[in-house]
Length: 337
Image (tube, rainbow, N blue to C red; front, side, top):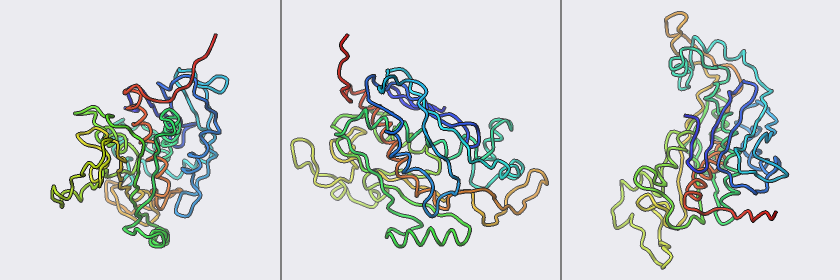
């Protein structure tokens, strides 16, 4: 459903053009120093404004409404709200009868018998990822400074050089189209032994979470699909030290579903944004025919531009859950009575 995690539980709620969106994080250890300003760095990385991102401007000021007292977490569920203000719901009225190709309009209406909130994509909107970023920021605090999670864009529109990636975005904008990309994430400092085979292996749980991010269409670890074109002698990572350090890292820091102490490396493929201004054709349920469609509204030409911090945050959520299951995490000290 809308919750993930066993010890570190994250629940998302809200709709793109509803009154608010937010997150409830359960299992946060008591005593962690936290304020709304602590969330700002990662929230600013997700915010629109760069060329190729949506013109929609939201303040995205977090309101921590539970789970915090005197600047420290209490151990009870932490709830964070964001108010929606810059909405133009009228842009979406036509999409009830003529759902966007590639978007969730059609399936959401069928699944919930037309009672879904279609405005701005409703609960399927990328705006819901605000809660992921909040939960990820808090998860990083629980993990502590020894675990470092960093994501970067490595490809946009099939180009991997900075100039080529920028040109791909500009070209898509000129043609009122969109373009996809690839985000790579590297995690260092994860000890040997996290992961619970079979079905809760590190890859299994990370993949489950990453595919929950809107627009993610592929996930690979280490050498990924390139492994299918390698021999075992090439793909194997020789162990060169007693701590498990390997000479290469084709496995992406995971063996048998368990972290091996080397950097965890994975990549996600992000599809082109479904909502584009370029004329398309799709079925119109009002006329019973395939009709031209021009999507109105404000949309990202390349949603991958805003994806690195979301990928980082989702990785932090999953790894925080593994850390708590393993009995490790931040030491918040003891309160003397």
